[in-house]
Image: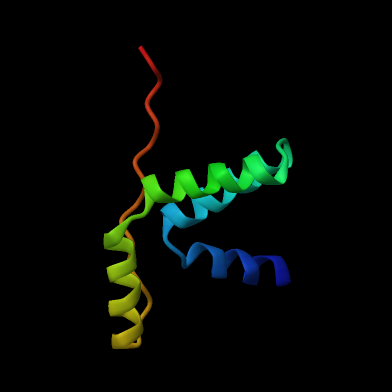
Length: 78
């Protein structure tokens, strides 16, 4: 039950933010601190999603849950 409660809290966040956190955790597992922080800064700069931030702010002001757009699925390289 505790794990499901945590999973629900995670799922309420921006899909891009959740995917980004997972990417950062996986990367930092195999790299040193300096490289990991550099990678995180670069990734965040490129993946920052203004619509997600705007939706989070609007939801907070309106006292409702945010409704984020889903992530696009990766397509295999041809």
